[in-house]
Image (cartoon, rainbow, N blue to C red; front, side, top):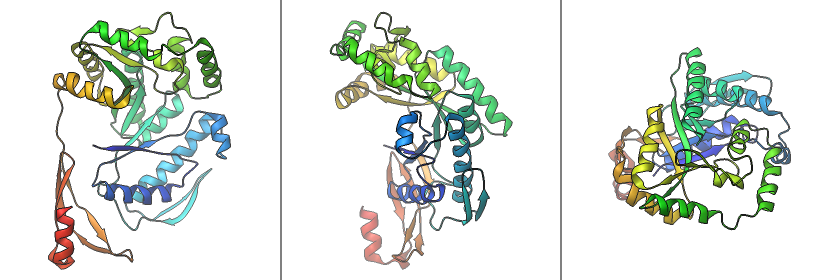
Length: 330
């Protein structure tokens, strides 16, 4: 299991974020991933004291990531931008993943694609119809190429998987059976204040109406009637859903972030019905963990391998036999 944790430029400093990322990366034994979230609700952001408009937030994010990436690369950074300034910023204690955990970012605007191309490892899109996802992938690839970079792609979707198509669509309809027209209208008014292009695209898929929620074969927009953000689900029997996933993979998507309702029950269904039909890989990653004394010095380093999230570590004898045995047993 890996952990995709959000960081918020404008609400967190890049230097503090780098220290937190390093600590959590060590604590999780190299299983941390970072989602860079610029925010899309001006009302919520104003409540947090962030008063920039949409494109200005992405300019701030660009400065944030410029500092963050250089610090994590163990540089001493002096930087003065429009929004951020640091002097002799550095990272005392690095995380396991070098130079830092993979950075994810989602966004459908030109400003988001620019930042993704310049800084991000994995560009995320919500579950739009495949032809729309293909357009985004092409745009972000062009942006990355301008900086001499390549980038990977991911999709965020809900899943509703049952043994038969009929059962799956019945479960989808059952999921929104208590959603009233008033609730849909109220949610639409809230979404209308967002300056997130991605949210605008999600809302456009269903237009606040129940009449035609299957917006692409087996892609259902019912969740988005009242839920902000990821508002679509793949619905069907295991074979059909697996084929739709492969369709996205054929566009260049190699990361899928799935969820379902209720979370635990749908997780079991996906694991039992869907996963056997998909090709998956176990991760084998060489890492070099570090251990700090209470005063911040690196006490020792070792080498290890993670196999399926399990870490076996070889420690130097100088660390002390008792502490070494305790760490190895953990």
